[in-house]
Figure 1 (cartoon, rainbow, N blue to C red):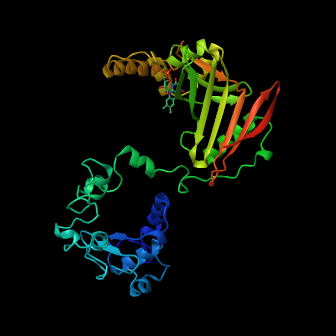
Figure 2: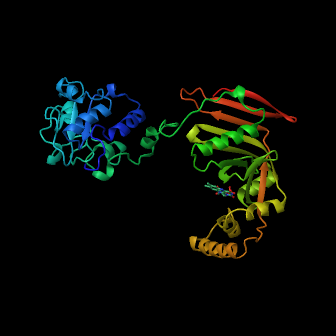
Figure 3: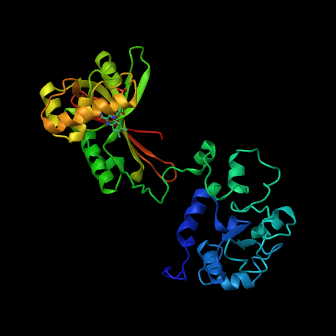
Amino acid sequence: MSGWPDFTVSPAAVSGPRAFRRAGVRPEETDLAELYDTFTCMTLVTLEDLGFCAKGEGGAFVEKGRLRVGGGGLPVNTDGAACPPSIPESGGCSCWRKRYGSCGASADSGRCAGPTAHCPGRPWPPAPAAGSARRGRWCGAGRENRGMGTDLHELLRSLRVWDPEVTELPAFDPAGAPGEPLALFTRWFAEAVAAGQTEPHTMSLATADADGLPDVRIVTLHGADAGGWAFATHAHSRKGAQLARRPYAALAFYWPVLGRQVRLRGPVEQAPAEEAQADLHARSTAALAAALTGRQSGVLGSLEELARASEAAWERAEREPDTPVESWTLYRLRPDEAEFFQGEERRRHVRLRYRRTGEGWSRELLWP
Ligand SMILES: Cc1cc2nc3c(=O)[nH]c(=O)nc-3n(C[C@H](O)[C@H](O)[C@H](O)COP(=O)(O)O)c2cc1C
């Protein structure tokens, strides 16, 4: 505690609003709260920071009996391994009493079955099935089960797109957008970089196989200009074979920090071989070593086999940085169609689609 900079503010000032936002409830909709390991004055400050009362009103809030079990409005359970109930009228197993009528033991007595994850006791009745997400969350399953479980559906329900903690949703006025997609892409790309988007230059590349069945993977953007959006790979890879048969593809970028997506569709052409080699040699030793490792998309016998091939490729890449990799191919997707999607808080997403018309572009809005 000696390191805590300001005792008028608790960690809940940060974590509280975030937790309420994620749970989709407001403080005034809470009918039971548990404050874990808060000593008396921090209990008051934490109540304020969680938004149960105004800042500076924590003392009055408690004195008015708002925390009293049975009629107070907000029963608060203040317990913890080190801190005994700091507000006697509300402490101990008030959570348990409030929900199930009686308890008779404190959380730390070893007999309590309260809803604190650290609490070694019985599960909530009716007993959730062993291994269920609810059991991991509420029952006496030990500290390792505190917090979020690993159940896929529970995790999915807990997640949101465009969490205001990490996403800023800029206004997008399509009327002011440039007349062609490259200029808007260039602007949005620069804004994604400036906003701290990780790996903004990675994109999904969708191709189709000989039967017309779709395929998709992530690749790296090597450039975008009037000739198209460029990416590089081995001609013998699965995508390379698919593009050889059906030279048409789609790209999708997603920049979550700004709630933006860009989609492109169009024919794909191979750049001249010298251009592909120059592009490869302008990149890192790791990129050259990866390309030299080769056999992309073939079946690999073992990781040891990969380690041996990679080791040899790294030695060669360092020794001969200009060594050519014949199968390495630079492709350009020249879009017929480009769509810019700007997420909007109230889900009135703005979608602007460009379509090539001879030498120019038409523009239209799409329903989200
Ligand atoms: C972030 C990221 C970037 C990647 N960039 C490339 C790339 O530029 N070129 C490439 O061939 N594979 C790249 N890959 C690997 C591909 O996703 C894919 O596994 C590989 O190309 C084989 O795909 P295929 O079997 O469909 O041909 C990248 C993967 C990730 C996760």
